[in-house]
Image 1 (cartoon, rainbow, N blue to C red):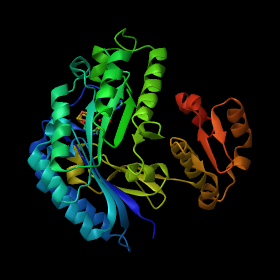
Image 2: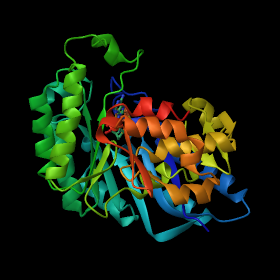
Image 3: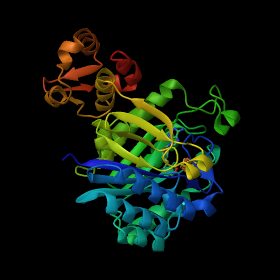
Length: 374
Ligand SMILES: C[S@@+](CC[C@H](N)C(=O)[O-])C[C@H]1O[C@@H](n2cnc3c(N)ncnc32)[C@H](O)[C@@H]1O
Ligand code: SF4
């Protein structure tokens, strides 16, 4: 039986950040207890309907800000999940949080209930940048949140950073990176800002605002990121993810391997038994119709192959060619002969006959490379 993963969405936040498109709501955490009960109901309804008890090797409490709600709510969801699924003793159990939602007491409670990895959204250690993108915490709170996680006893800690922010310069990005990397944490996720047109951020800082780094500077930010991460002993195992050996996220790796995953909670997207589906994004609607689908799509064989290419190319090791053939019954080099030849000759893809991966110049135009396979 293949080990699978489960994602549980907790949508509550202290503030809706100006750049954020996630299903996340500020000022509604008074609903968190009732919400937790509904998530338990959803887990039990969905998993009881299956003829097998799935084996999980990864559980991910994502958000929103799961760290904001009372740990007892997460503990109840966790127990429900463990009643209806088998959880491998080595399973990675991650909880996402903002730094200022962490307290020593909460962090200890998370460890006690079996959470063994914490992912903290820092974004930047510049107060100017944090304010520019509408975060409701300071650099001091960011650093103190990390300290509390360490003090409580977490050893598997990841931080999220963002680059390409308004008011961010190459120097300030280097300062943030250096300061975070010097903490010696085993995992880092660093995301280039995705600016959506309707976000409050694009209202205050439109795409053409001079406060943003230029395209050339953005590329330089990425180079600095990969260089510094490497200098501090973190390997880039995916476009946006860096880790010490052995600290790659099981949850993310499973996702990039195109494995099935369960998902529960408002707006959560799952991929189970060849179908991708998503719960209602409206909190009100989800809380009365937790089994209803806002999206449902049966994935055909050719789409599954394209998605597998797209996901695996995000990883440093790229596509494992023999595994690919075993899993999808096709020889990738035969199916996409022309595209692979052209992209390899252009220096964007590389292969040693066992794997096919994006080169560093390829990573910078990854969307264009992937479009060749679509
Ligand atoms: C669900 S949030 C993490 C936990 C917590 N809610 C927080 O923000 O600290 C996931 C991460 O996605 C990244 N993110 C969110 N919106 C983004 C955007 N528009 N562009 C790039 N990265 C984004 C941020 O780094 C954020 O930490
Ligand atoms: S705290 Fe995280 S999930 Fe919540 S609004 Fe901000 S970025 Fe989005």
